[in-house]
Length: 212
Ligand SMILES: [Zn+2]
Image (tube, rainbow, N blue to C red):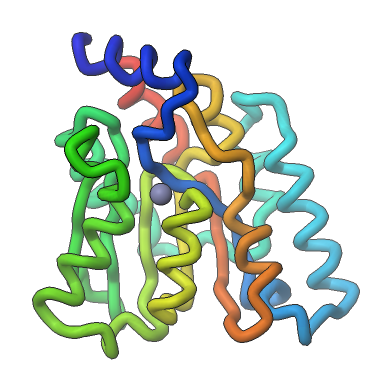
């Protein structure tokens, strides 16, 4: 509870202490670089942005329908790894990186000691420390919260091909301060990369961590 009080306070004061994620989806049917702007892509992106504007606790089905990347059978299992990481953190954000169906790295938010140590960042740094950066290309990153603009940029720079998140930035904003830039928008404004984004996987469980 003390931890909760701490982050709530940070949110009220406008601090961006928490790092967390955000997101959206794209790649398959749509999203990606500016060069492939077809009708379906535009439609998916519009849906994503619309989703970001949804009232905070919209039904999971509504969120799922708004994302461009379909949920895959393995997603819940790996999301639970990210949620387990989130449960370890003062600010409940956790991430897991999967390559070819195998868990390769995980991490969680390190709190106020390092404002850049969001769950996605710690997972990425752990992966690179152990294996180098090359293996991140095409990897899937699972995160309890939609990646913030910092983390989404890092994800793109690392060549990660797919992002799966639980709670959206809109949902997270009901409990903690968030930079209001959907991860899909960061991807959309990146002409050299394509990232598939799927949101809303176990979002209710992720949000429950903030109510502990
Ligand atoms: Zn972040």
